[in-house]
Image (cartoon, rainbow, N blue to C red; front, side, top):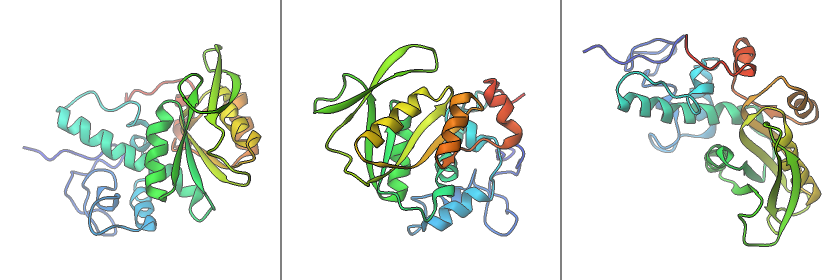
Length: 233
């Protein structure tokens, strides 16, 4: 039986030697957190950087491969999440970050994973009506044009606390700007914004002009992400 292959453009059989040493287990698996005797954060980044620019690190979390055995799909999705988080955190290496805030709802998954790697606390920024404590609310218009309200607990952010905001996607920027406003209204500092994709929209450009940002879409694929063309053909 032929060995399963890593994603294009890498396209090396799993288990074969990689350039510069190491073994291709799937994207950066040999360097991911939780394997071996406690890899350091620079080692995690090195594992992701080895394949940086491969579309799967950006896409697998939200568009896992649909063909092949289910076990390979699961492996690709798991590795895609690890590579995606490593890509998102790489620009912030060495920056002072006190807490990671994930935005309802996919930001909970990415944000919690980022907080675990950084060994920082995690804060959920939620759509209104879900928190049973005192909250601060912020109205906003989401990507579909619907009027909504976002909230955060008032006792979680103290003045000067540096918050990394994490979400899956920034399309029009309305949701992320509401989260930014909540953090800043409580006296916190937005240390950065991280999302799998930040679209080249008016809102996306405004966020990138005013805050340090990270995303994991290779520049050559950005137009396809802006048009939501995420297929592999």
